Every structure is written in structure tokens, then in C-alpha cells.
Length: 401
Image (cartoon, rainbow, N blue to C red; front, top):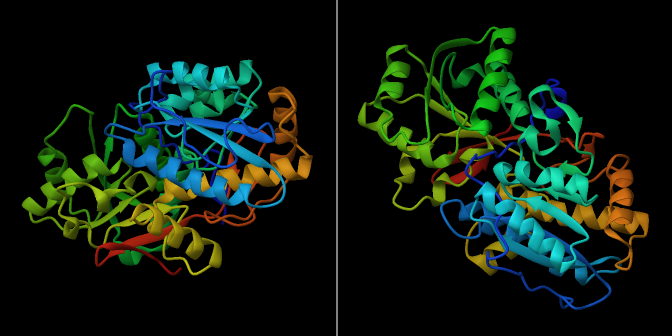
């Protein structure tokens, strides 16, 4: 089933980390690819993300995967890309400056931003300047809608490769309803000052009620919190055998540590923001054994596209790619497919390229490593299949339905 069909709220992967945004012109710069940046035959492809700082695990994954994809694409017939990656340090105030730097460079098409906070800051500029952006991981509805609260007034030039946040909540509730072997009494701990977390939480709770799930506890925290003992104890005291964590992996790791201290051993369940917990410095990854998460990508998938990408990424960067990397890889190939189909060339204006991209993305079907038979609505939201993975022996393993 498609995430976008779970409910109108859709499973858009809203990696909204409010702290994440685009960088300014002073952010470090251009990712070298072939052909050279000055090659007139290359379409200028730009994006910004946190290449340094606390969120760099996301930004670097996107940059690295995009570099691999661009190198591959540029060795093929058809469109060529020149890639410019700006470091935004996941700060929304720097997003506009990063966008300006990319526009000064002559950007013609974009992967927008890595994070939702940044994407929300610059999406109106993409609309105003009529530049097409396909974000790999900015999953907030605020990235594609000017009125995100009501899912109204889509920007029209910003599309998502990732699932939207609300859809992840709906899909998580549906998955837990279908897999009662994981548990039947659910507790939720979410971050109340984060759009990503609250977007998933709200739709999860609505779908849980509609599906008759037994949510026995829900507790919130804010970004400045460092002690999660009260929230964990509340879940344990309520007898929850599933702890749903619609949050990013950094606070999730601390909650797992606290649960271990209290001797509380539920089934932990998260969404795509959980990706990265196994690479967190100084975290005892044994505490994440048995943790489930919904994600668009599983690195152990057996298809040739995924195997080749994972092998190349590991060889070049010495680590297994996460779903941010996979979505970025798919972004480049989806843009290539659209450009080739529309006959886009580097001498075209950004506005003409945008028109061609919107026409293609709202009518084409794309097969990638994060899903097959992907389609896009006119609002920019993607429809593709979710995957469940579980951590076993320190690695992500696909879960068979």
C-alpha cells in the first residue's frame, strides 16, 4: 500500500527538525563533480544541508549520495549535472543566504534542502523565483504548502522524494494494528516543540483511535530536556509493551538508556527520524536491539540497484548509507528521468526547466531504491511503499510482511 493512501494527511517524511535549515553564503561549498562546474552543457543542480554540526549525519549522507548519483548520471547518455552543495548547519536563518548563494551561482534546478526547517524557510523563494526543487528529506507539509496547517495553497514548484510527516503517523498506527505480535498496549513519547514529531504524533493518535488501538500513555518533552525518567516511568507504569517514539534518534537514544536503567523492555518503534541511531557516538547500540522503524529504504534489500548503491557508498565512505542518502540518490535519478523525457538542456532558463519538471513529475512513474512505481501529486507529495526494518545484531534488517 502507498503511504499517501493511508489518509489525506499522508505519510510525508517530514524530517522537520525545527533546528535544521539552510546555510548562508558563507557556508562551505561546492561538491566537485564531473563535468566541471564551468561546463556549459551541465545543468546546475544545487541544494543546502547541514554538512557540519549536530545534524551533519543527514547532510553529509545527502551530499555523498548525490555525488555518487551525479557521477553515474554524467557517465551516461542524456542530461549532465554540475552539483553545488551549501552547508547550512541546519539553521533556518541561514537558509535564505544559502539559497541566494546558489542563485548567484546560477542554479537551474534543486534538491532544495535536507531538513524541513530550512525547507520551510526557502520554499516561498522557490515559488517566487519559479525554480523547481525536489527535496530528498524535508518532509514537513510546510515545505510544500504555504498553508501547512490546512494543507492548502501548495507552492507548486517544490516536490518531495520523502514521505510527509503526517503520513508516517498514520502508517505507524496501521502497521501496529496489523502486527499485534509486537504488543498491544502502546505508549507514546514525542517532542512537543518539533514539527516533525508533533505532525507524526497527531496523525498517529487520530489513526490509533480510528483503528481501536490501545494507547495507554502519551507524554511529551521539549528540546531543552535532558531527563526522560518521568516519561519512561509513565509508560512502564501503564503497562505499555510498545513504546512509540516519533522523534529523532538523538533523544531516542537517551530514552533507550533511561528505559534500560529502569529495567523497562518494551518493543521500541520509530519512524525515519530514527535512522542514524546505530552510528551515534558513545551510544551502546545493544540497547537498540529489536527496535523497529518504518523507512523508505533498507540497505539489505536484494535488488541490484540497492546492492550496487550500497556497495559503492560503503567503498567510498566506509559506512552503510541511511535513508537520507537513498532518497538523495533517487532524487538525482528522478531529475535525470524528467529532464531526459522533457528534452531539458543547460541553455534553458530555470523557469522553462521548472515548467518541464512540474509537467513530468505530475505524470511520470519512477522506480528507485526507495520505492517502485512512485508518482507525485500536483501538490508535490510522493506516493510510494513503506518498508519496516528491525535492528538485529547491530544492523538494520528488512522485516518480511
